[in-house]
Length: 293
Image 1 (cartoon, helix red, strand yellow):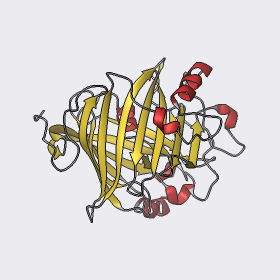
Image 2: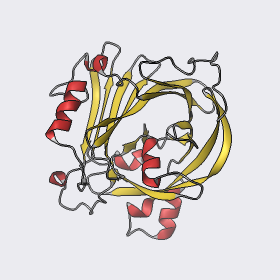
Image 3: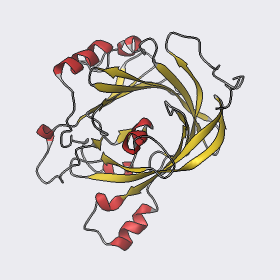
């Protein structure tokens, strides 16, 4: 899970929601999320236990390390499943301190944006420590806020979001991803497929699309002088992503800083498999690479 402009967003209250997309976050969807443990009236110490991918859905497992020291920072299990007229993307993250978090995003199938986001961190006993919720709904717009794009995202996005704004990935393809980072404003990122190259990760060797993300702080501060924005841009965290060049375009590697002040990190695919089936690969240093694609 990545987050932009933490150094700016920290000065504001938690993100308010943005203009609505033609999204399907109906009461039926919310009931499904509650039954699965993603939404609840109160934090549940056992909420995580019931969260698992449905059968025949691909599950990706990644490891995130400090790029300088090589020390492991987290392990992530993610998948995307269909829920009615929406796609539900889930990330379960385990940290060395035995903390873990659950994050989900709801993507309407007819839009490149996001309609709902939730994140909760738990202690080793499953007790909720911190949580965040965001909904793309006009009911929460406040006075003084800019007009948000309809395809807005929350301040945290999964790698899959970058492919959604591009469409079918191909060399030279590009798109714009907009993230709300305060109750009043948002920031845009230009997402570009720079080309194809071969990379090797613990899960194997793949032909990969290299995707760059370039933030544009002028979308957040349109009245500021260009030379000031140029200085700020130098301190904005950026990342490079590598996605398998074959469908379903799974994320293979991420390089860069996910938050201002944070370490340079590298996230790599450990293995992928269909839920309920034997994994293609074994997690860890003894992993046997899958055949090159």
